[in-house]
Length: 331
Image (spheres, rainbow, N blue to C red):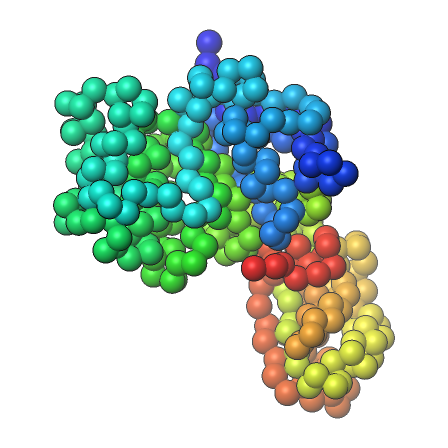
């Protein structure tokens, strides 16, 4: 009988001496789902991935991967996984094709089967034209696609991706996203860590926001934005020496502003103002959270305030993270 959950963790904990990297977290990943761990560097994402991949032991809690305990059934679990590490660990001296074939031999796969599978993976990764090229001659985006192709050689049930697009330019990132979309549509379970908000919104059906080893929130990207932010955000710059002093004035002004006819209530449930929630002070700008950012900007101009720049946009996962942790993400 198929296992309902690809991964299930309960009270998962990892300590290094007095330091707790993962602090008693609970989560499940459904089969065929694209699941994300979102958070800054040092949040415990990579440590969690290492425990899933059966290369790090847990200090407490329980975990099952494809119905197996990674600590008791390490080889069996690893045989069902494809792993994309943060840093490419390809053999630079071998060709693109040889990297895939050699990796497949580690799983005991027959060479005749591997030859056909390698051609399929090269086409999937858009690397057929580079099949005989040495890895050291590839671009960063090509190396990343090859790393993913190599990880698929054993036809894994679950693909683990740790910061899959770090260091790639926008074009390479979008090509890689397209390959991952195709995998998701084919039914492969994807589990990825990232601190890139747009990546999480694009790739993840569901995610957990992690900080300091703990889960801060869980849900779909749209659900998290709905539950932890307002519909829109107004970005304002008054100048580095004026942003802080303007924050309180804006809070007082917008808290008493009339509600727009189509504005959404603030996340606190108040219908007063322009759907106003709060002002976030960043080093270079102010973020005004409101149901209607356009209405908020009109109120600001009507009060005689003149920001140097203004931008109205929809709320994003980055706004959720700011709301939950009170600080920006770390690259």
